[in-house]
Length: 94
Image (cartoon, rainbow, N blue to C red; front, top):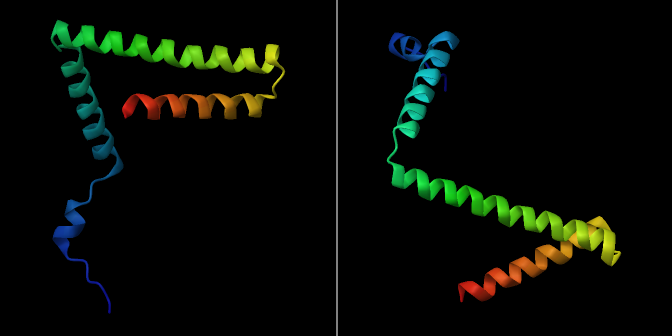
């Protein structure tokens, strides 16, 4: 079966310039909404970002400690930490 393309389908397709213009407009609206967010929401988001930085920073430090001071290879240290943190997560969720 042969698909036929009618004139309205061709008109609906956008050229690259229009797509980029629409994308940047949407991005600009998103940033406007982001910066106009209430202060309480900013406080929550900042604390959440800091918590994530601390969490992944500790994981990095523990992996480096395990590989340098305990004598594990990098891949083994990663496996040990992955299993440890997964089990901790399973225990706290139950």
